[in-house]
Length: 263
Image (cartoon, rainbow, N blue to C red; front, side, top):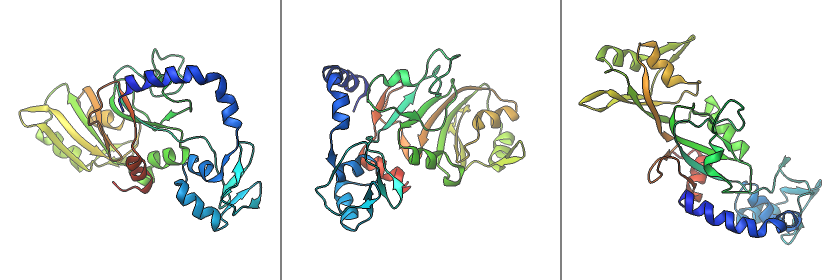
């Protein structure tokens, strides 16, 4: 799905239906659809959970597959409260000059401007890229997944394309590969390489660290300034067929991959 055309069609449809949106959100829906919308599982899998008595509505176990609920009902699976809001997963190729905070009174532009009103749901960036860094940024309203993708314990792989102000020497290359001390923490890249054998100012670096501005800080410690920094890989997702400044929704396969950590 390409960002601009899709967003335009959605805006037209949305404006025609805006008067009905509030009423539709309060209409009862099948319990399996409610569970599916929560992002827990598919409707078919939800039916199995219901039949096994693992779902409660307002504190009571429900096994009838024809049961309908609305947004005022409290639906739980194994004592975890579920939300019926549809889960949205969007991948953006962030351009330079946009901040990834939702609100910033000092920023001229935020990444949310780039997606416009592509969806009704409120989505948020997963992690951060600083204003001058470009590349992959995931946006979602799935708080559980966002937490797992940003928590250091889950070790999400990230790859950056670095453009330096001068060639990286072999001595500094080796030192960075062995580990850089940043405020008492040794940051060891999973991999580092020259991306162009004839241009030693271009570096590819793979990291799991989620420290703030970690790539810039590594190279600055060795006396280099980063001219451009581009995140080209994040948790199994790449920029393939996604131009700078454009977005797309993740496929079901990609969402499954992120949730099952199969990358």
